[in-house]
Each structure stands twice: as C-alpha cells, then as structure tokens.
Length: 213
Ligand code: GTP
Ligand code: MG
Image (tube, rainbow, N blue to C red):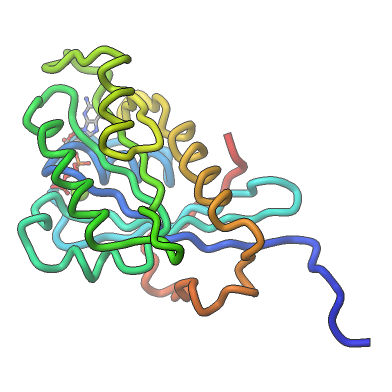
C-alpha cells in the first residue's frame, strides 16, 4: 500500500542571517561556531559569505544551518532584501566596546522585519548578541534594560558572547534553532520543498558537524 510510512529521521535546512554594524564580530562568531577558530586579524566581509553548520539535534533530527554572513556595510546598500529572502532566523550582533553599534541594532532589526517574514506573516525569530564580552564594556546595559529592549524591538532574547573566548556562541545558536524548529513543526524538509532553499554544496564555503549544546 502506498503512503503511510513516516521516515525515521527528519532533516531540516534553515537559512539564518547574521547582521549588524561593521566590525562587531559577525564573521568571528560564525568562524568560532563552525570551525572553533578565532583570529584577531580583521578583514571586512565584502557582500556576503556563507558557512554551513550541521547539527545532530537529537536522534531523529538533523539540522543544517546555512549561515549568511552579511557585511556590516550592506545596510547602506540595496542588496539586503535579496540576501534576506527566505531566511527563517537571524542574529543581530553589536559590539559591547562600541556604544554606536548598539544604537544601530534597532535599525538593523527594522530593516530585517520590513524585508523578510515567515509564511504566516510573523517576523522571523531573531536573537541579539552582545559580542566581545571579554573586553572592557563601553556600554553597561543592565539585564533588565536589555530584557526590556528585546521585548520592545521583538527579539526572542539576548546573549553576551565572545567569539574570542568562546562564550555563549553555541548556547545562542541552540536557542535560535529551538525557536526556528518550533515555528517549523510539522514541516520536515522533504514535505516543504517549496518553502525551503535548496542547498548547493558548491556555494557553501564551510561545513562542520556537531551535536547540540
Ligand atoms: P564586517 O564583515 O566588516 O561587517 O565585520 P564583522 O562583524 O564580520 O567583524 P569581524 O568578525 O571581522 O571582527 C572584527 C574584529 O573584531 C576582528 O579584529 C576580530 O578579531 C575582533 N573580534 C571579533 N569578535 C571578538 C570577540 O569576541 N572578542 C574580541 N576581543 N575581539 C573580537
Ligand atoms: Mg565580516
């Protein structure tokens, strides 16, 4: 009899954006998360870079995160609408040593929400990252203030991260994926081909495998 069989393992492919001002550490966070590497050397991203992280979420779920590392300078360009297309989650990053980068977070979030939405019309889940927490802070926002800011601007939550010292990078990613999966319940990869992006291995610069945190 045809049909009726439910496949044992579900596979998902999620496009996740990493956005925020120039030099806040977007590329470094991705490098840390995907390759467990860090470099002090700054080389600005031009346009967009890609990385792939494969997560053995649980015994029945495989998640591929396609991370879109978007150059800080792109907010002033016209490409963000193209880059944001079909994303299902986002990190907005700022640098705790530079207050101006926090001030720009609301603009990035607004840009994001105005250009991409979930199929049901809701904003895509997004998480705020206060990066370089290994350094002396320029802004020392209280937890209450940050919680309030997240509520007002529509972030699911925020994490203090350090790509350098490997603080909270995995935790933040797990938190975002949990929320993406909650939105995607009942829509495993094979059944939602129309909504999902196709993965072209040649466009993916980097890949690593790991279990969840
Ligand atoms: P654009 O591509 O220009 O938008 O910048 P970006 O956001 O990708 O920043 P990138 O990751 O290139 O990092 C900028 C600089 O900050 C580099 O010199 C990194 O080494 C440094 N950096 C990134 N994350 C951290 C961190 O957690 N702690 C410290 N101390 N330095 C960091
Ligand atoms: Mg970069």
